[in-house]
Image (cartoon, rainbow, N blue to C red; front, side, top):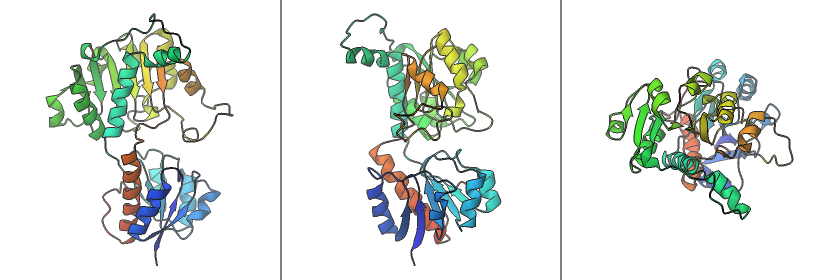
Length: 329
C-alpha cells in the first residue's frame, strides 16, 4: 500500500509536473489541493501520514485537526518554519520538517536589490515607462564606495558576502556564530557597529522571538542618514511603521523588500480587485525609493525541483521509520 501525502498550496503551472515525477519515483500517492490548508479543507488529509505545505500559517487549531485525522508529519517547502506553531505540533505529536533550497537564488536576489536600491532603479524604470528620460533625481552610488552590513552568516548570508566581495565594497558581518570562511571577505562586528557604520544593511537571519523587529525606531536612529535596508529573510525582522517613518524623514534613503510583516494570505494570490488589508505594505509600495516584491527571492527553476524532491523524500523516510535529515521537530 502506497504512503499518502496531502499537498496543499500546489501550483499547477510549475509544481505539478515535479510532484508527479517525484511521487512516482518514491512510490507515494498524493492528495493535491491548490489552496492553503484551513479547518475546512483539512479533511483532505484524512488517511495521509504526511502534509506538505508552503508558507501558509498552521496554528494550534489547524494542527489539532490534522492530528485528529492521523497526520504524523508536516513539512514546509521552505527554509523557514516560523509560520508553523511548533509548540502545538509538539503537543499533538506531529513531527515537523523543512526543505532548504540552495543559497544562490536568494543571495543573487539580495545583491540585485542592493544594486537596484543604490542605483535608484525603481525611479528609472518608472520614468522609462513614461518616456521621461531626464537625469535629475536618479544619480546613483557605486558599491565600491560603500560599507555593507550583512546580518546573519548562514548559507545565504555567506553566499551574499562572497558575491559582494567582487564589488570591492567593505563588508561587515554579524552572527551569533562566527564562520572562519567569512573572515576572508568580511569583518565580524557587533550590531551597534553595523548600525553606525553601514551604508547598506541586508538581513539574512531567521525570525525568532529575540530578533523580532530587529530593525526598529531605536536601531534606525543609530544608522547613517540615507542608509539602504534590504530584507530577503522574514518580514517580522523589520518594524514596518518605524521603517515608513524613516523613509519619510529621509533617514532611510532606499529599501529593497522581498518580505514584509503580515504578508500571510496576501502573497501568492491574485488581489488586483481587492483592497489590501495591509496598510503598511500599501504605503511602502507607494514610495519611489522602496522596491517591494512578493516573497519570491527563492523562486528559481532549481528551487522548485529541490524543495519538492526533498519534502517528499522526507515524507518517505518518516513513513519508513528512517532518519530524516530535514526534520526540525
